[in-house]
Amino acid sequence: MINILSYACIVLGLVFWYWGTWPLLGRRSVLYKLHGLSVADTLGSMAIVVGLLLRIPHEWPLLVLALISLMIWNTVLGYVLAHCVTGDGEEVNHGG
Image 1 (cartoon, rainbow, N blue to C red):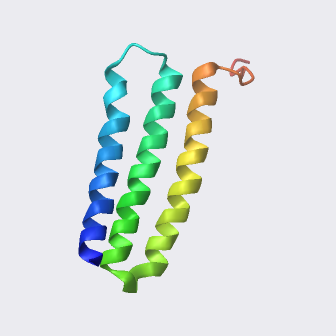
Image 2 (image 1 turned 45 degrees about the vertical axis):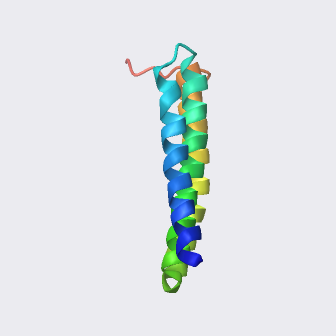
């Protein structure tokens, strides 16, 4: 039963990956594409790690660390990318 649940989580993660990648071909704005990609990538990666956690429970410290890192890194990266794309930051003068 655990193997079936593990495979289901891994397949769900792959589905999320493809689901987030597919809208990149559309004609929506860059921010919409980045948001969809980052959310689907985070959920897909987390589902895959949960599937691995079910298959190899003795590695739980590393896999829980991977889950926490995915949550923090992908969230922060999404905000940084959106900030860079919108140009809301201050202009930096590199001249003399």
